Length: 477
Image (cartoon, rainbow, N blue to C red; front, side, top):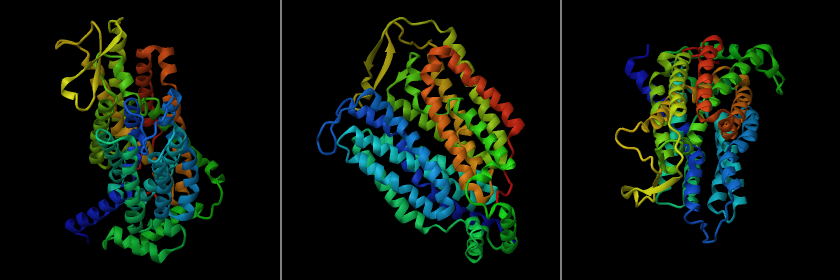
């Protein structure tokens, strides 16, 4: 019988494995928010590492952000095959390589073409690592802590997002990319090779002796390892010999895929990605528009807080309840923001920039609307508070949970392929939600856009209660 201290010791060792597995996501987080550093720098000084000048057009600046999602599409597809063929551990090493090449290319860039190619390669890393690392964590974690373990990936990503913004203040954009190179070198050459292979992958590839050794290390002496191995094999028996991708059209598998497609759709069209990418633009519509770096830092901190909270409660409360809570918070936040925007007095004056004396050293500015400067009795804090609440809500459920359920919904034998299809569709939907932000705002008005996010969240609550299967505390094979 395992004692409480032995269990804590074993969970502690697993937690170190989760951190090592997720360490590469620091680079992913840096990649996602690096455009803020690049945009801020090139407006002031567009010099490269070699002292030459880099010219950036408006469409190229837009592509710096969206290229990540384009690069992730082939990354997801390739990872679906790679993770099954090469194994989870070495797939994480392989996933780091395009990111390593991309960050190196960006740091040495002489023109925008090199930057965009580098961003595409970093996007491929985002897709590949999303499948490999999350699949590995799901398969090594104890059932009781599997949900919290999955959230560690999101926490490390937020660490990277905050770090790149902090590094971006004293360092140039190409120097920040060099830091990302260092993170990936440590990850793929030092940390990942020290990890064991996934025991369930070893089972489905008929390496039972290795699997038993890893299971004893992970599950402790209190677990009947031969019986556990037999149960895991039985869960994958029907699909173990499948080849190709046709099995994804089997009725039960297709049903699960469609449920996850719908869940990603709800998440993306409640503004999960929009709030990360367009915080400054959303705040600019109020009288409290922070400079891009400060806005990004604010959102990232809120996302980190939400991810930390869900890490503490996910395995206790369950996926469905956390998702319902998350969507209810988003519903309320955007309903208030839409109503406030609708009834707000329209300002006709042009925006002017006022430099804050306290932020001179950081070259930060805050936009105020002329003749409409807020005073202590102003309600202009409402949009900021609503966006913070929406960010908190999405990071506590609608952001991470679709990614957590993607590997949990499928057995080991087909997990990587099925997950890559679901996450690929989620990435396409994320790209669509970002591209439709301005058209939806023009068509529906600003208030209508926020109300549409609120209505989508309401539909998501019903969708979750009707269709989502609870996986907390259950073996996922």
